[in-house]
Picture 1 (cartoon, rainbow, N blue to C red):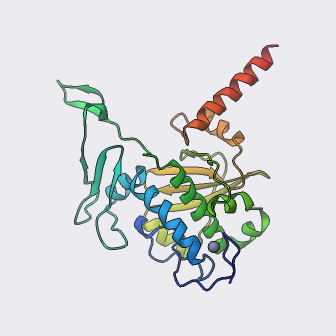
Picture 2: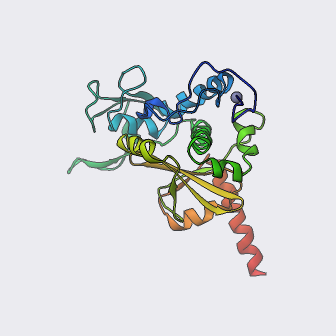
Length: 265
Ligand SMILES: [Zn+2]
């Protein structure tokens, strides 16, 4: 069988979970051989980073999701050690290593403040790869027409390390159009039970958006290329959306400035 990421004929021994087991997914898997062992091994590296060193570990801890090995979720984000409850009770997160920097506008009189934890800790690239990986396996498994309709060469080159340029994505739950579920029927239902949804929206011929939602966390990425055009519509419509990796923000700001200067003349 051919691997959907590297196109190699293979007889894979492992079965790839389309959505990581650490998110609580047990049954949504790719057909054996559709993700070869080499790709699967490569993916497990960025998967670990994305799951344990980003906002995903906070959410896994908050939702009381057990790991593949039946342990509570644990990770590290920006010197903070984060752990879910040992007995998987929801909404109980242990955070070790908090300093004053983590509290914004703390008022000692009312003992009120905002707790600030970064969304990513050198895990942006890993998160972008995890999103792209889940998207392609899911589309291949559940929406074969969509898989055949688009050219995913850029995505495949990025995930097989043939092209390592960063790939932009946004943290946003804003729907710029009507997003539709990729998993169907039982898969959609089971993923819903662990607060996961995988959806797509065909924006234009160069923009096939994928939105992954896990509990209160949503991320959006274009599956076809690294273009930044769609980003602007998002940042204009959703004031709490953020673009990652952060260096892309300068680019969009510069582009806006060029447009602004150009229109003055
Ligand atoms: Zn492969």
